[in-house]
Length: 438
Ligand code: ASP
Ligand code: MG
Image (cartoon, rainbow, N blue to C red):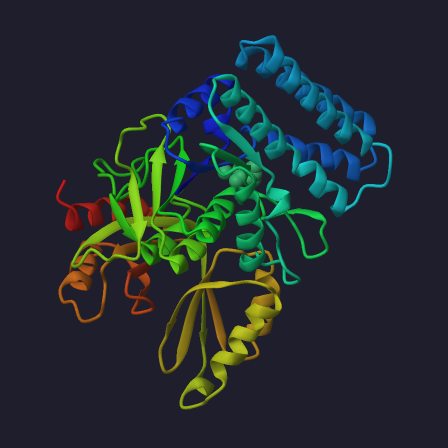
């Protein structure tokens, strides 16, 4: 069985919902995970903000606006009075439920309940639409099987057992629709898998049912070997190893939510990225297979700060790095790149919220210098150390660009350069020319 996930824009209007319905009703049994209609979760966050600020009028205004938008969607989506009325009733009940939260104290707990409404509504709308079209579709309530444990991590055994029980209730359904993003926590309260978490839901569900494939459908055109907004020519990337995808996920390459990778990778279930706007395009397949000897993609991330700590005391001393890292840890700042020499260490960070405090503390251990407005450029592919020639090719492309740091050997799949943000375009173009034959 396949698991298909459609993001917010893919179900963002009645028209798009109809297209999704057409795409999934091919007679094959499948599980379909849906996000909220695009913009809804943000609006629910806004409503919650008003309620935190004890402004029920502000909240109500947005609630009313959102409700009338949904009513209009319903009028456009269904052709029969029966399904129109049925769905309108559901939506009315959910919005009245949201309104009931404007009258009392508002905490994180109430916010989670409000945030869950987007997915509850979108899945109800699509299930009803499929049923109206005569498709054997059933709604599987995610709140009955998606659960996190005491560490707020998904509980795979619980998910597997409860989901199997839900599926058994409807053995001959063709399409199982369920909500992405939402879950219950270890205490049974409504919770979620963090913003953008429906990719994670799809991956967890795929692993739980031993799916043959997990498909992530968005409205963007899969993965490219370089940033099409910056370089002249790019090609689609057809295949990636999970670890290559993990390297790229950090660069906001808009491929898929980083959390989605792990469950699929461990269960050895391929993840395919597909485009709702171009459904017959092959997309990008992410799996545990490595394409030998191939450089796959180049990606860049801006707003990076480099910090160098130089110290005579580092020479032949042990424990120096631990002290340095502890400072970053104490300010909950994660380090992205790191390069060391016998007399110094350079690191890069992208969160500068506590930069001043970090610099102050680091000065205890050495001379500290900072470079702002830097950029990490990352080359991803089969970069196993025993291969020869690939590092040289990447380095050759950077020949005319001042490079602040180089990192290679951290994984088998990447080499990263830290350069000035102002050199990014030149670097990406040059890497593209040297590494890919367009
Ligand atoms: N609707 C949720 C969000 O906007 C989850 C998702 O779309 O993945 O964050
Ligand atoms: Mg999303």
